[in-house]
Length: 441
Image (cartoon, rainbow, N blue to C red; front, side):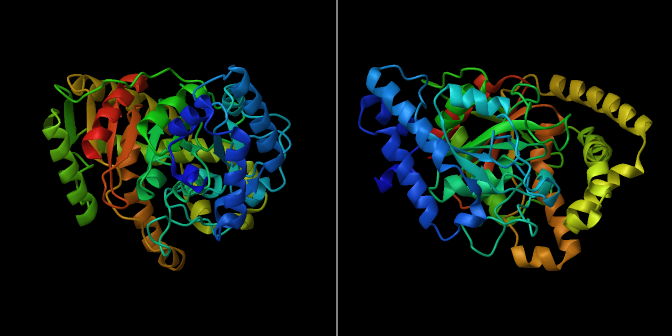
């Protein structure tokens, strides 16, 4: 039964469907593993055993009656602690929301429950989701599966750890500037950033309402495709996909600049394998992207501060100082800056999509750096700022350009390759991703 902890969600679903695995037994295996794990309280903010077992019993009855609701019916998953859960605290990694208990589930959680997925609990995260490092001295900093001394990536830090340490089959996180993909790459997982607006944000504690997205962290592209459907997204048929004739663009502008040795070498090797599998790869530049990055400082901080200002300023001492400084930057701009910034960004987006229209996906290293030392991040403020900006640099391309984005492991610990595609083209992206996954295996 312990092998179940390391299987893909899709494989677990197939075993449930064939009668080889009972959802109740499966759920108990994960609940026991959580309770016995040395990092339990660093990964899970709250475990929901009563809910999980009730949902598992219902899934078991459906399986026996031949009435399963989806391919993942009966499979346990975890939820980042910014998705509302009825009757269970949702605190978004901050003292400002301590003991906040919603009256109903977030819409994506209701969707997943309707498809039979089992809710194991809520995972720790960066405070209010405003950092890509995964460091949270206020509540907890989850571990990285590859090194006990480094951060796990954020802001969906516990989400990634819950999967990577075999404490759930798949996880749901959010991505505003890289918060699904960074913890995925640093923990050797597959992470999908969906197009903004594809999945509902109702009942999700916001960071930046104009950039926030929902996405899964999992063991395979197949899992990501099935999770996308369960959350309320499009169905993606990834069977039979291959890379023959697929055109990929390596984005040299910004994304390939100052990439550190290990991620760069892993990316170059991964690209070679994609070419061997039939992909056509070309280097491209897009200089207006630099201006988009300049606008990010306005658009992200103003959006975030507009929502959190009154809550934070009532007692700033409750917030981790690095997050407080970052979000307060939004007070430096006015409404004209924000509106003009969005108008300019939309123009850059249109130009970018036209420039990339001849490619199936744009590729780059998921993170240009390896996960930094947690202790040094806490002790060295300048190091924190520098590493956070580098951590989110490449992933933010997809958010700024409004794309969907998928990160895949390369086989080198904490090094990944990212594929970005046009808005609302998740089905196509997942097909390419599945073929790339096989080439990289």
